[in-house]
Image 1 (cartoon, helix red, strand yellow):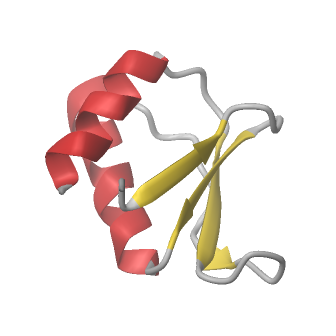
Image 2 (tube, one colour):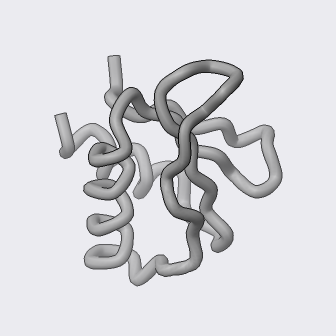
Amino acid sequence: MPAVHVSWESDPVSLHAEEATTLNRLFALLREHLNIRKRSIPMPDRERGGYIAFLYEPVDPRRLAELIIGME
């Protein structure tokens, strides 16, 4: 099971993880590999538990999946 769950149906796309550090690691990879910088900070997810953050730039789902899989 991936460490990060992506909700593509939300606008903007939301990312969910158990730890804020996981989302911060993913954002560092997105910046390094895809030059994606527009995002929120990770914040507690009151509905699902864990943490949530948002991407404010388009991202190729395949590239995002590759980065998430590479984190495991």
